[in-house]
Length: 270
Image (tube, rainbow, N blue to C red; front, side, top):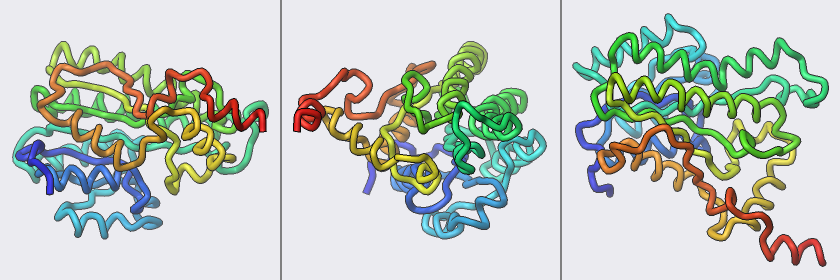
C-alpha cells in the first residue's frame, strides 16, 4: 500500500515494454500512490511486449504512439486530456534505442542513418514531446516531466556506443526546454541517471552484465534497482519536489562520485 502522494494526479508513461522495464515498475508504483495514467509505446513495441497486462493491472488505457511523430504525440496528448477532463500532472519519458548497438556496429564504424534513427528515438523525441505539451498547454502548473538517462553521458563506457551521445543530448534538451517550461508554465523538467539495470532494452548493450558488476562493486550503496528508480520518479512527480528542476539526478548508489572502491582494488590485486 502506498501513501496516496499522487492522488488526483494524471499523466502519461512512455516506454513500458514488459515487467523488467523501469517504466513498468514506475507505472505500478504510481498506481499504488493513487495516480492515474495513459500507457503508451510505439505500435511495434506494443505488439512485442505485454503492456496490455500492465494496463489491466493498473486500470489504465493503452494509446499507441510513435514518439518521433508529432501528429501521434498531439493525438496522444489530446486523447489523454480529453479522457481525464483536464491538463496533465506528470510525464515519464523512458525511451531509448540504438540500431548501431542492436546490429553490433562499433563506435568507430557507425552507420549514420542508423545513428539518426537512434538519436531521434532516444533524444529528439523528448524535445518533440515537450514541444507538443508546451504548444497544447497540456501541463498543469507544478507538473513534472522526467526522462531516464545514464552516466555514459558524462563518462566513457566503450560498448555503450552512440547511446552515450543520445543520452548527453537528452540531458541537454531537459535543461534547455526545462528553463522555458519553468519560466512560462511553472512545470519541472528533470532527468534521472540510473544505475545500469537489466531490462529487455538494456540487454542489447554488449557487456552489460560486467557494467552491472563493476558499478555494484564501486557504489557504496550498491546499484539502484528499477524499483528504486520508480520510487525516485514518484517523488519527482509529487508535490514534495515542486521546486526541483533542470537537474540530472544520479540514482546510482554513489557510483558517480567514486573514483575507485576498495573492492575494485582488491579484485585487481587478486
